[in-house]
Image (cartoon, rainbow, N blue to C red; front, side):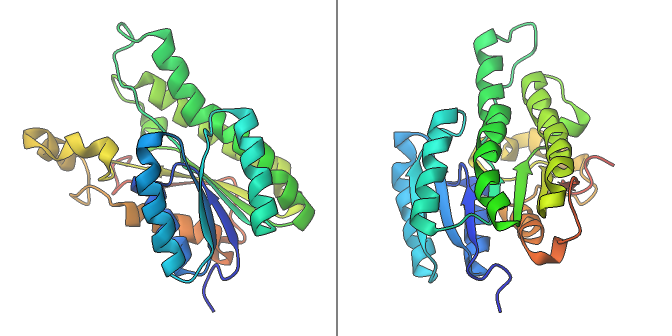
Length: 251
């Protein structure tokens, strides 16, 4: 039997990158997938992913929804429960980076990062715990970052948002453990996605790789494997933890 057979997973921001990798990995293991994308420009990619997932023999549906908007999350989760009947897994993956030195950072840039990276985790978790509490079961997986653990010059907003995700994760794990709902975080390092495509170019790539003990950038599949572990019963006694998938960058 597959690890996630007949489970229903919500994944935010899954039209590409890490989110897409997690959706594919979960579908391989039998999960039905409801995922979000936010912009019109991602609609075609979202439809392509939806078709891929359905071709793998699972139920899948893409929803255009902004995880940073509380009411949009409420509507989205209600639609998923109506369409899929349950929610077993929630992966809060939606994220954005607007890097800038603090001296040059605008309040709008700060707020945008906080809304997408941190407020979205509150918004979605607030909604999915209702059906999970009713079922007395669930796994919530929040996407943090190694930058949230280490900090990084020029990324104060990103680091603060991802550090906030860690604190939120640990608190929710304590609140919901008695209901058999687990909450964990993944802290990726430098992962090859559209967001980090600039890292592949020139001497900069070699500089970053030199600081990674395993000597390479991660892949979406590397992170998806951790998410699969946390979503499945293999991690049934693990909650409130942060698993770094960073090649040893944070050692």
